[in-house]
Length: 305
Image (tube, rainbow, N blue to C red):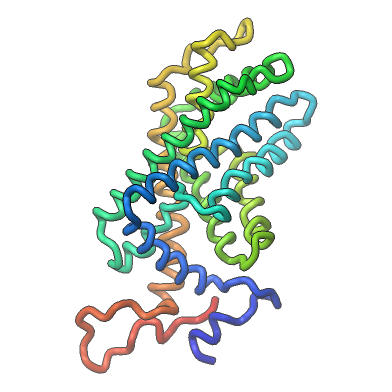
């Protein structure tokens, strides 16, 4: 069976894309994402920041219900948080954590280091602008005052819990977070329908949220919202919110961002690239640079799994 034919065989009788096909798709998307015009990239990044913020808003609503048991609240909160990634993956947007996978094209030398840095910087800043825009809308809607202000109290508690750990702990939580997020993206790429994509992404997203790992883009919503609440008289009596400062926000987001890069680019992007491109040759042959005469073309040894 040829490489391309093998790659298109069903997985366990399903019509999902095979892992080798996903790797091929992610490489091609990496090139497109890295070379997307700035305005389009930035605007799609704003959409993603707001979308993840909507998932965070949904999570906060669940977290505010103190009648739920610990595990139920965490898992249910994680499930509803997946709304954000669903909008990104199905509706189309540029998310910093997911874009860590463009390194698969970088390792093939299809894109330059400068293009990777430019993409990550553009998307990170765009995500921040989108998340802050949602913070403004949520605050102005008085949503945080729902049910006697329990939403505001929950938002403040979430922020305090995120700022309290030391930066090393936050860094490793960031690694674990984006390992799961990029696996969710990977599984979503396996699907051929909206239902397939949703089914693939929900559990990895729910797992990282329930475990309390750190997603830098989600925190661009959680922490600024809490900062606004702390400075506008929404703090319940007896709650200490002294650590919710701009320095406290940076204390979380900087190591979370670095950890997200390691988790997504290293533990998912590099691992799958090493297996399906470096180890098995990939599906689509890479552009020939200066291959010696008679050399076996790349991609000839590709297999489906």
